[in-house]
Image 1: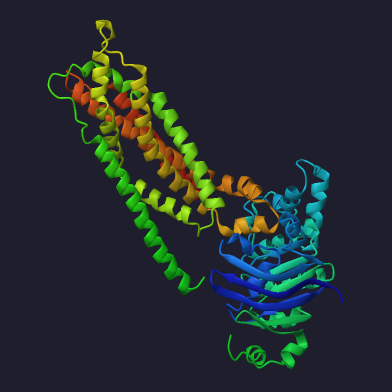
Image 2 (image 1 turned 180 degrees about the vertical axis):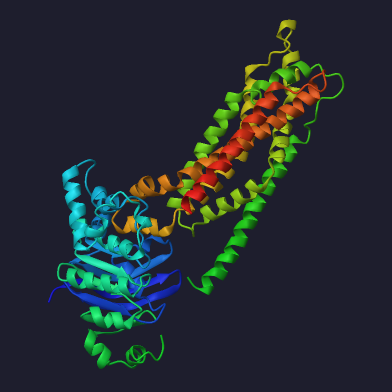
Amino acid sequence: MNHSIETENLSLWYGDFQALIDVSVKIPDGQITSLIGPSGCGKTTLLRCFNRVNERYGNVTTEGKIEILGKNIYDPDVSLPELRKAVGMVFQRPNPLPISVYENILFGLRIHSPMRSITRTESDQIVEEALTSVFLWEDLKDQLKVRATSLQLEQQQKLCIARLLPLKPKIILMDEPCSALDAKGTRAVEELMEILAGTYTFLIVTHNMAQARRVSEECIFMFLGELIEHRETQALFEDPEHEKTADYVQMRYG
Amino acid sequence: MNAMTTRAERKQKVVLQSIAFIILGVAFIFLWHTLKNARAPSGQPASEAILRSALPSLFNNLYSVLSISLLAILFGIAFAFYLEEWLPVTNWIRRLIESLVAILTGIPSLAYGILAILIFFSYADTLKEAVEAFPFPENIGTIPAQIETTVFYAEALTFILMVMPLTIKTTQEALRSVATPIREAAYALGASQWQVLTRHVVPIAFIRMLAGGCRAMSRAFATAALLIGIYTGYYTTDAGGMSGRFLLFLGVALVLSVFSSSLTEVYDSDLA
C-alpha cells in the first residue's frame, strides 16, 4: 500500500518545551486515519506539521523528516503555496473568510492562478461542482452572494471543506472538524468524509472516540508527544497492545 | 505555551521595559542639557518681530502640519506592518520598540508642545543675532533661510515623535483585530503573506487604521493650535484677540477626532 505521509523521528519544540518526541508514522493513501489521545498530547501539533502552518509561530524548532507524496517537505526547494495546495486543512472552528460564499470557494484557486485567468462560466461551474460535492448546492444556490460568515455553523464547516476541492488536494487534514457542530452537523460532515475518502487521504484529529471508531480505518494513539500505537481502528479499540492505549480507549482518563 | 515560558517572558518584558525607559531617560536628559539655556526672550524684545515671523516656520502653516503628520503617519503604518507582520513576537527589537512606543504614546501632547517651544526658543537668540547682524533695516523681520530650516526640522522631529508612536500603536491594534482564524484559513489555502495581507488583513483592518491615523492627526493639530495660542497670547499686543489660525487648527483637530471616533463606532457596530 502506498503512503501519503511518512515521518521519521520527527521531534518538535515550542521554545524549550518538546511537543513531539521521535514520531515515526506512515499514513496510508486514500483512507481516513484518525489521531486520538488526551489533550496536549501533540495530535494537533503533528497535524499542523504536515502543511507547515506551525512555522508561523516564531519559536518552533523541528527535527526529523516528513515526506509527503514522496517528497521531503523541509527541502529548501519546496514551495509552501504548492505544499498547502496539495495538503488542505479544515480547522476546529469553521473559519470561512469574511467574503461571499462564491468568493470563498474561488479564493484558493484565484491565489494559485494568474490574475483574471478564470472566466465567469468556469468559475460558476467550479463553485457549483464544489458545493455539489459537499451537498450544499441545493441549500446555497440562491445565496452565493451571502457573506459566508453568516451561514449556519454546519454549512460553514462544509463550505470550508468545499473550498479546498477546486485546488484538487491529495490530502485533507482535519483538526477536530466537528467539535463546534451539533449531532446532526457531525453526522453530515462524517458522511461527507466517507464519501470523499478514496479520492482524498483524510487525517483527522478527534477527541470523540466514537467518531474515530465510526469513520476511520486506521487509528493513531498519542500520549505526551509520543506515538504509542498505530493500528487498524477496530484492533486498536478492541484489543489494544499498549497499556496506555487500553486505559484511554476504555476511558479511564481523558 | 506553558507556564515556564510565560514567566521567562514576563522577566524579559521587565528587562526590555527598563531598557526602553533608560533610553528615553538618557534622551530626555540630553535634550534637557541642550535646552537648559533656552529661555523666553525677556525685556523689550527686539526679536518680537522675528519670533512672530519665525512662527510660520511650521505651526502657522496648515500645509506643513498636514504634510508632516501625514508623512509620520505613513511611516508609522509601514513600520507597524513590519513589526506586526514580519518580526516574530519573540524578536527583541520588536519588543524594545513596542516598549518605547508604549512609553511615548503615554506622554501628554502638551509635553510635546512644550518641547517644541523649547526647541524654538533655544534657537531664538541665534535667530535674533543673525537678523541683527544684517545691516539693512529692511531685513528686520526676515529670517535667514538656513536657521528657519533648522528650526523647522527640529520642530518637525518633535511632531514626528508625537505622531508616529500613536500611529504605530493603533495600526498594530488594527492588525491584531483581524482574527487569527481568518489568517490561518488563507495561509492554509496556500496564500502568500502578501496575498493574506492585501486581500484579507488590510481590507478588514483598514477602517481602524484610518481611525487611528485621524486620531494621530487630530493630536498633531491640537498641539499646533496650542502652540499658536501660546505664541499669540504671548506676543500680540491687542490682548483678547484669538488668532484665526488657532481656531482653524483647533477646529480641524476636533473634526478629525470626531471623525475618528465615529469611524470606530461604525466599524464596531458593523461587526456585531
